[in-house]
Length: 180
Image (cartoon, rainbow, N blue to C red; front, top):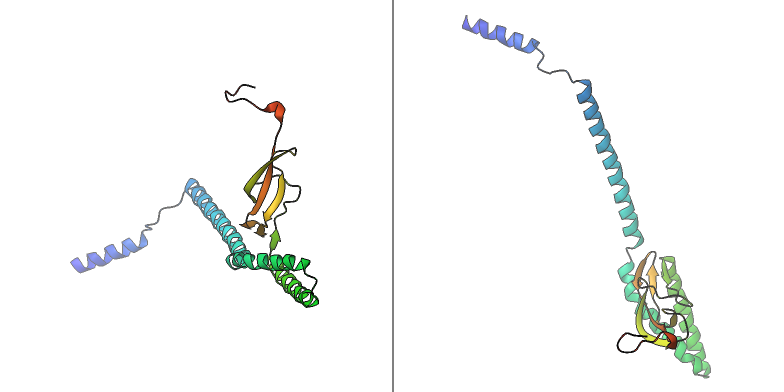
């Protein structure tokens, strides 16, 4: 008999539903949680896609940065050969200019561009001040570019090294005590 009673309990236990019904409030909470998780996942996908695009776009940044001194050397060689009237040097200079143009064109295609300094105000994000000169121009105007700066897409690879102005106005000079 004991065996039969055990079988009856097993049958009735299987027939009883152990799952309770989900209330409308619980269903709403679960739906809300699911929507939030789905939105977070979509934001994650968008963020990683943007990061991947940024990485691909700027993958060559270190290599291009290491090539900047080569560009400087080409520019210096071309500039220094301007004062020589030797026809052989003129041919050599023409070759240098062609190689420089070709190299710069390749780098431009990768997103490289010079930082503009002509008639610009000093921008600490793009320029590095090496010298300050007192003059009649407005404060923080770039007077001279001492070394070209470059950007790759939206990041600065090398800051422009510049000389800026400091306005020398005798009317505003103060003495040592800070009194006008």
